[in-house]
Amino acid sequence: MPDSTTSQRIYRLDRFIVPYVAREEFLARVKATHQILNEQPGFIQDFLLEQPVDENTFALATVVEWENSSFIENARAVVKEMHQKTGFNAQETIASLGIKAEFGSYQRIR
Image (cartoon, rainbow, N blue to C red; front, side, top):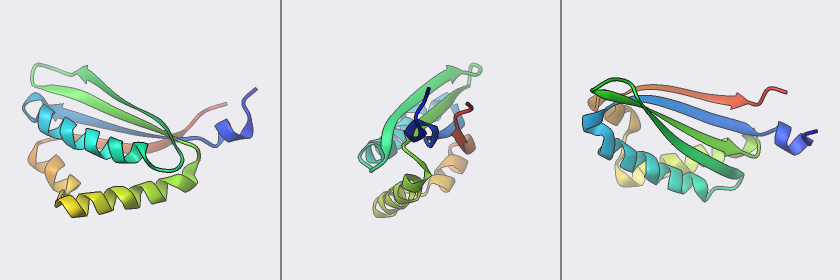
């Protein structure tokens, strides 16, 4: 039987449809962001998953497991600060590279 600690875990799942021509640039940004997330309190683990969609695009799913929702706001602030320091605008990059994105936070079903 899971304890209350595991039942509070939050899973951030983001899915992107990415043109292959943007693959390396986008993956570099995603990996840099996940490196920062990996160093944050409450971080448990993450996964970067990919799947071909067609000859021009692939799907990239990112999953981050957090101890609970209280850690997510701090992590967002740290990522936002990193993006500001590097002059990176995620929304502009997604739009300019022709990427479609879906974002969400999930809890495990018991």
